[in-house]
Length: 451
Image 1 (cartoon, rainbow, N blue to C red):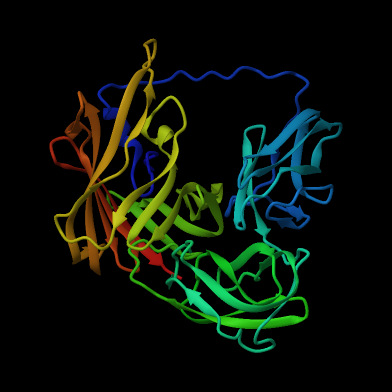
Image 2: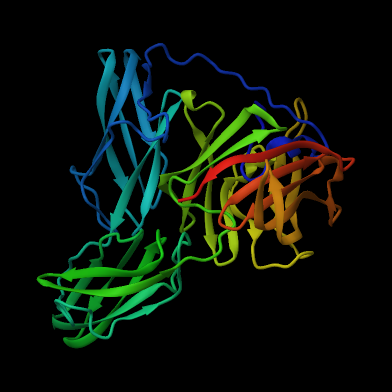
């Protein structure tokens, strides 16, 4: 099994950034009083086993003693511990203390910070070199000092206006909102959120300064799961009405639906294979919601994260630590556009510039600016992979470029990658060419299931 696999691009190009640099990594023995152990992880999903999220998390609400998570830790050696998560949406979880006995123990991680947006965040907890993930949903809630009722209760919301386009698998943006007619009887603040329906939540907040007939706007978040007319109920006090959101299925060259999975073989060797799947959890970053892909070359040993992906219109994006991917000294988290499905054959586009330093062993830091150049080689053609024909396939050429003396230069020494994306099937083939333009390695789909 080749270890350089990356989806949808691969790390082997890094060795061609003008020079080869290998950082030395050393591990010093920690304080002897520190505990040794591991977080309990679901080998299939990467989720924290037995995690319990306590408390109700609301936008702009301060945490109290009810906001914490229970996490299972297997303790091998007693001693002090520090367990924490990353920060997402303005808050994080952390616990410190000492283990006095070995075995599986329950640790309470308190919440710190304050949620800044209504969304679901996936947190990564880390301890002694191990990690696991768990989601936390932040609600707008229903509250405030203002009192109002929904027009149309208990039937359809009277005169509700649903704005925006709702495409299956595409994250909602600010244009996706609903305008509701209400009657205000008491002025004051208000906050309102619907329950998650078909992957979507609508929420909003504000302040009433007058009584009487008014409108409020609820912004949509999430991404539709299935197509059709979806009934969204909304409740305020004892009044409930509902509005319909029409979700449509659109051609998707990189499906991200939960539980979809692909099996690939490398260089035609049946037992040199990779399994890719989409898990239910999502990742929120930079104000966007991404589907999480996992991969493995041996399901018995568990899965690792393959990347975070989303679609907006005809553009497909990955959220990535480009600093780690390119080989910079420091992390550089960003999203880049690896596919456009509305362009014709011959069209090109560039990603944004990735800038960082690279320090060769024993040398001084070198500033590097790089980007990717993409070219549509073929549009909606039929290709055959392992005896199966895949119609409506886009063939994309990916090349690495570097800024040299003010000019962008394609690094031909790095070779290039050709990716084959089939409509409603995803990545079905990927070929790697060397500097001479000869096929070096190929990745072919063996089977796929799209939900």
